[in-house]
Length: 236
Image (cartoon, rainbow, N blue to C red; front, side, top):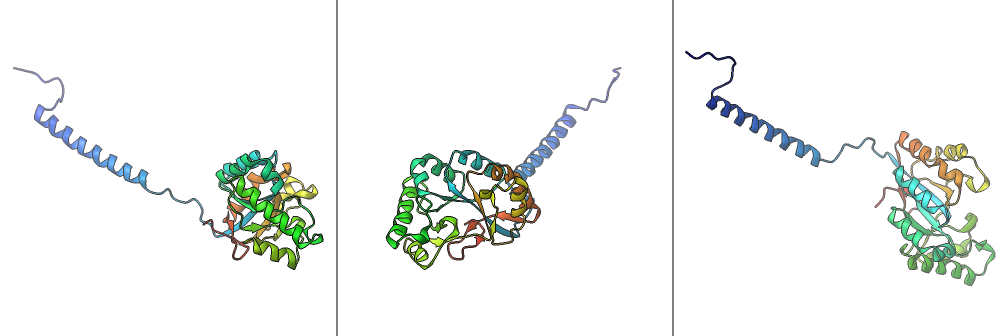
């Protein structure tokens, strides 16, 4: 007489159980694969777009600025001076590689309204060439230095296929504004509006994470500036 010391199933019963278990595992794996392939849920929808702009680059601060923008999920329009683009083509390429848009900010940053039409044309056309030659593409947006413009400046820019972009909010970073003040300026942005900041400002660089947090808390995302309207829109 044999005595069973455990509840070990017979070989056929064990085989059936293993088959059922294998099928269950296969079904679970299929479900997990399908879930992994699905698009992740968006944590927050964009209810509007704003235009972050940085003038006067590229500079010795550009690499750090690009890193901060990328780390915080922001894109921006970089209004480059032609003389700096020509001298630092690798930084122009880095701007594009980081997902930024590149605009024209004149060649030497003069008061354009005090120049002749031929001089204005030279400032704008040389910058177009410098940026394109550096790998930044052919700009479609133009910001006159100091925001100074007139009918002649606008007409010359238009001849080069450029839309003039000023700003709705001035961060005052060029005037020594603190990081707190720059963050507060960005908090005033509403859908479609553009803020003026500068590539070289250490306080602006420090403000980037808080600007990103502030925009996200209001459902705003960093967009591109439309050449048609001059306002911020969803990236194309």
